[in-house]
Image (cartoon, rainbow, N blue to C red; front, side, top):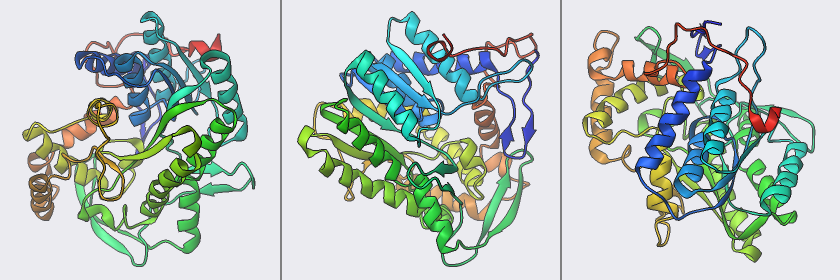
Length: 397
């Protein structure tokens, strides 16, 4: 079939398998260009199919020569209907890893569930014995609690008062005002249940109880802080409460796993174009301005550049891991440089529909958004008939 991007609001309903494969190949090439990192050798990535999770799996495999197990929840293709991009990403990753002689297997299902945790433990026992790094990069708007059976939904809302500020429709470039009503307490509670640290902690306890965590293992989850202009709707909003919980959970996990000297960390990463961030008011405008500035300064990084730097310069640097005053790893340091943020604040004040294409990088935003779904890559013939029925070998074999 001829596969073209079909948009509905902030979602692309199609994904291109060859484009997704090219995305994976590009990330692998970048990691290889940076040389080897003396790091983990057996890695579990929970949330492994897109974004930082995919970048973590690629960096582990092709930067550290690590065997990887990836857990994700993606939709398979059907005749005449494409899979989700994470499915195609994972298929491509497994193909590339297999060709390179690197172990890679995947599990598709609800990572919040006890069943998928047990399936993962069984696979580790069978094939790897133990893992020495666990990346927790789960991003989901909903969570079925494995104990209560209650379905919790997260929301992106401010806390305390209505939030009003600028935003942009990145499809049209139209800058407008948006207002978001404040969250109720149950909104906050549900968001923390979905996006906080509880499931991360459950994963680590289950892995340890099963004996599949190696001595001196490490686990890392990803977070975001961001600038003052977004904090009311992000860091000081419902999602910020969830991130606070995630970050505090790192200390709890480290304490719980003292017997095997397993350390848990949260890495605070840079703002990037994702499906989730595209739907958050204010964030697309901020990212558009940020990209323009960071590219001009030679500081811009995508997922793979950040995670490769995280591995090489932070967690496997041969010395102690540098942490901020709250015990977090900061790979958002270039984004949060004073000169960068001062320029963002300056441009924010004057940003409007008429000048955004000049003062911001809306074209770069749109391209990155299309890239998420396998579109817009050089070397891919998007006019050619493409087989949508691409399978993940370790799942479909």
